[in-house]
Image (cartoon, rainbow, N blue to C red; front, side):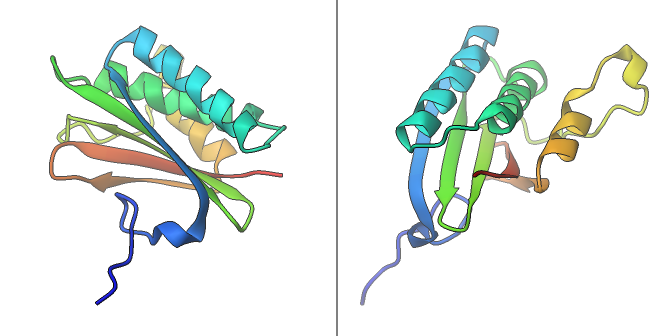
Length: 141
């Protein structure tokens, strides 16, 4: 029996040209490092126009360390480059009870998720055994 390798989201890994994953400390420094590592990985994959993906990674990582932080637990950033011209960005944290919701009063902050929703072709939240994963899909040239 041949087993098929899948990603943590349950999608077959063969659908992706490249997968990158890194766990980082749930700190502002960790969120910044997530963005920098994601940009470097996208360049390694040969992607040149990465501004949208970079912004989405930055917003999701910032949300993970701000709202999804559990003391002593890391967060994870995962990039999956699909053959069809899109990049799936996933950021997982340890706090399942705090699902992201756009702020109904954006004058008080909370621009991150509306920005992600505007830039991504799709986004959502998926439960995990510990915590949650917030994902977004962006088009890449």
